[in-house]
Image (cartoon, rainbow, N blue to C red; front, side, top):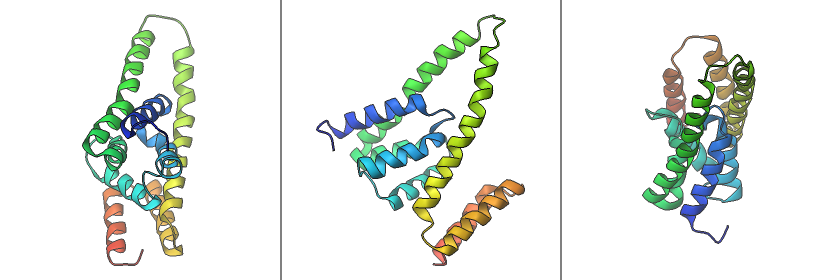
Length: 176
């Protein structure tokens, strides 16, 4: 680990990551996992998967995962530092870009950039799903459950909270 304080490591890590998190914090989950689990060893695979699950179940933005990582590293000051580092640079950049794009212009660039970001965001979300599946699917039953939930979620209009509840009950029962 580096010689700088955990707070500054959180700020520098998530501040930089925020600028590359196209599509929001959820798109940066693979990189968050790599940094929190593999690089800095702030948490284990299971702790990361649990924090991600808590972040997804909680109301509010997906950026809660960053808050939980910061809390695991340095308590409440770490949670605040990580959250602000993840949100502030992106908010400032979005503000500046939106002011630039709202100027009257005949340029095609804004539409082209927005169209290019769609497949990029989809790919980053798929990578997030893969990382989480690899961290949590340790048995054949868990792998089957993940595949079944993905299929049901993509082909039906079932509320995802019912799927989460079913998975939680299977885990509580010791099946998964």
